[in-house]
Image (cartoon, rainbow, N blue to C red; front, side, top):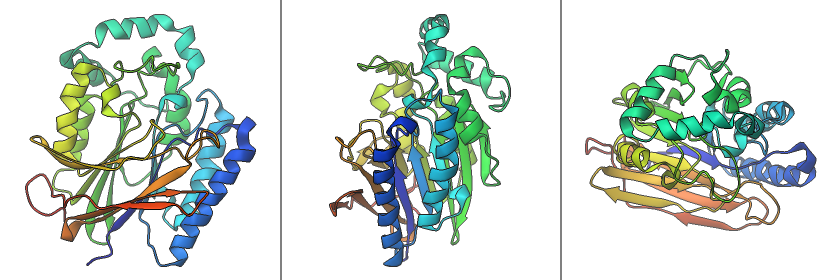
Length: 328
């Protein structure tokens, strides 16, 4: 059996300078665990982070630390290129002060973005906006994330707009597409599940990634919120499309690990819901490792604790590409 393509799936670091001592303990344990696996012969290809990199997206200092130190340390421990460490935004990655200050923007968006057509029209009107330049009010809440995380140059990136960063790679002869979707551009970040049922991933964003990844051996979608957090119209539009066009769906937000093989009339997909790397020491601090062997239509998923020796494995039913052939 071939070596396979191995992915470290991490989510929800919630980095905060004021809580650095405890988070550093968890991160150090993560890096040690990755190093130990490498020493035991495990070979990694990607580190995919599914949102909530920082605790407060208004803190440029937290982003600067995470974008440089954390990402660099991860790449070094896994021995992957820095360009293979990819991020999507989460609800904590927004600047909540902007949402609260410009509450009229939020109220207006909820009234406008109610159906599939309105959402696609809005995304079409904003895909040409550069995330590195002046942003319109609906997108300002993620300005720091755009400029300090997605704004980094990458020769592997084929799409960059406020809703999607998409990348194409060649891994030992297998073509791999990774789409980092943005489910946070509509989040307010407020507590008590206020955002539930109001978020948007965008069918148009899925269309763009799917078109770019046509014919690729392995297609991966990364986003922060479970699809149940989207508004009804958007969930109906994107859920089937994601399962039809992607082999792996990686997300977080819930702070617990729950791998799943989902088989529907729209298509089959492996779901990796990662646990919380760190929000406090009260949570299970862990991450997932997903290994795909495209030529054998085989997927293995392990979820691990960073602070203990606890490890669980899950091997779902064999998946296949959307044309019925093996993943490879």
